[in-house]
Figure 1 (cartoon, one colour):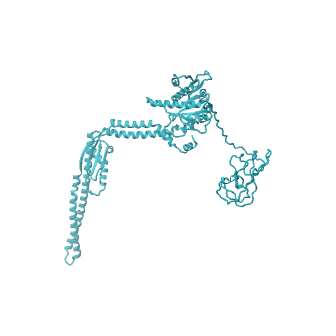
Figure 2: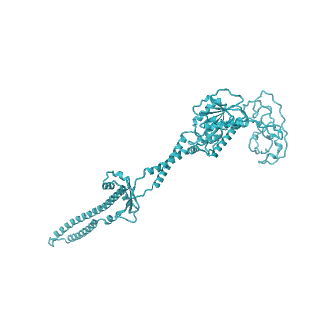
Figure 3: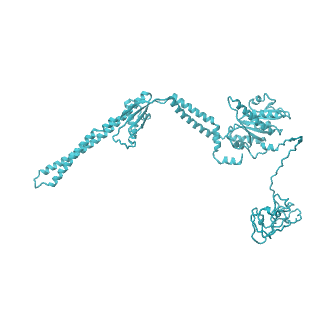
Length: 621
């Protein structure tokens, strides 16, 4: 695993890739829960069917109907129908003792248009549902008509009260007119008499108006009483078992799938069981060198079985190439994959048996190794067998690192080991325990064979700092085979070992005479050089190169070394060139003579001729 992958994995609180892999690997769980929800929904529709529902349609006429009404009156009627007063009246008609609040739970009203309402009522049976719907509809119609009549009666009463008040005023006016008329003509006031006559005429007209309006209001709203009625009599809606089962099954499927996905996601985060290659290799401290699929349970197709055997033999061949050169004992330690480890150990021992005797040490529970090796030339001994074997025999051990392992006995199985780990089964803590116990026992891990990996895992399972145990380190250290070409043996070419430079402490030594003429300090700059600005002549300094005898002079300020100083070397002759116009982009190939030096064999890089401050122009590199 590279450092970049580790940094990315540790920077997030929840690794999305790991979460997706955990959900995908637990697809059996959420698919099973979805199927269970589908089955339970279908069974619920069969054994617990929905109660029968009776539907009735009412035509509701309003006194203030208007074509521009936005449905406010109908929404008011729906709200009135769902009140306890209407429910109580319907239950009284049915002679039922059910509370009105419980009755309203089975009632549903819907306004279809401004004057059409649909009422749905549930019942224990078809007849009960129809009776309840009929009683509720009759109670609503009676209440609607009664409310309109009450409004009309109240309006007529108000008009009659106004008429009676006007008649009382008229009686007072008549009495005033009679009193004024009984006076003699000298005492009569014509103006007051005229106003009384006018007042009497107005009151008479008001009384007539009030009487007419009261009579009209007393008639009420016969159109409301006649128009509000049950248009569609209550009837039971037909029920389809198939439709009900499909609806309930779909709801159960969705709920089961959601619950299964949530459970898989939560358990994938909480359980902390590595699945990705980079996680397994990081926790065990070894590289994943191969992977195998887990054998499927139940009957398997012939081609699928042959493919699994082919993959296992290929991995066994890889392990044989890795351990063939070393005559030491090797063990295969399984973790949640005993069957794969047993078959892989038998294949590995069979391959090695072609080059010499092999003994297979079986320390697994059960007799899976003995059954697989029964038909082969292998000798199988138990893990408790302490009889010393033949030194010429190759020892291949098979054991387990599951919880409860005797860690001190693992060295008896082999000095090196290959771990066969099933992905997603062991926790991170136990993987750390296995790596720590193997390290304490002095058993290096050659590599990891990952069983049942995620097919879409693209992570890197290689530890780049484990070259001493990795297969690539073994391949580099193994002797290369000698090929024979036309009867002549080809000598294998040894790969040169490149030693990395080691920084050693630099001791201060005595200054020595520079091997090259002194140059200005600006000449040592690693960038492009331009013509210098005329300045005072600096003090000659060494350009930083190490002389041939191993002494070091840093800018001419060193101290005397105990080694004898070598004779100064002759400075290279300077080749005179005619003065040229300085060019800032001069190539090195234009003056090859300027880059020659007597010390070119002593320096690891290309050296150039020193530039003297006396020159007016300094050529750019």
